[in-house]
Image 1 (cartoon, rainbow, N blue to C red):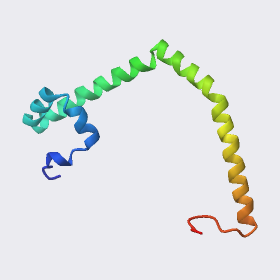
Image 2 (image 1 turned 45 degrees about the vertical axis):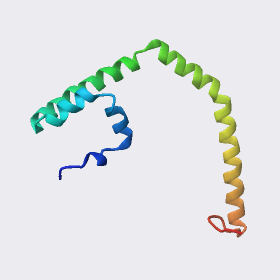
Image 3 (image 1 turned 60 degrees about the horizontal axis):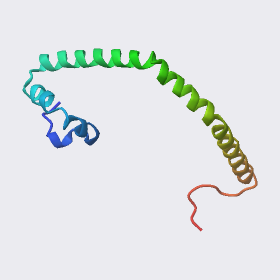
Length: 103
């Protein structure tokens, strides 16, 4: 891999990196082995954060509430989408061309 211009770093992550100037300075000056150690440490932190998130009772309860309250909407949308798909299927079977045709 060639050395990358800092403009090649994805914008999504560049926004986050702007809030981590100390980390950026340390990472910019790090050797390949030091960068690998930083990755392992960060991955360990990600693992711990995800584990804590999964065991967060309030968050899980909130998810269940959202899931319960969204179910009627989700079911209604699924029903309407099924109707559209079936009508399109029937139209196609009757010889109607479907797709990108512009009238």
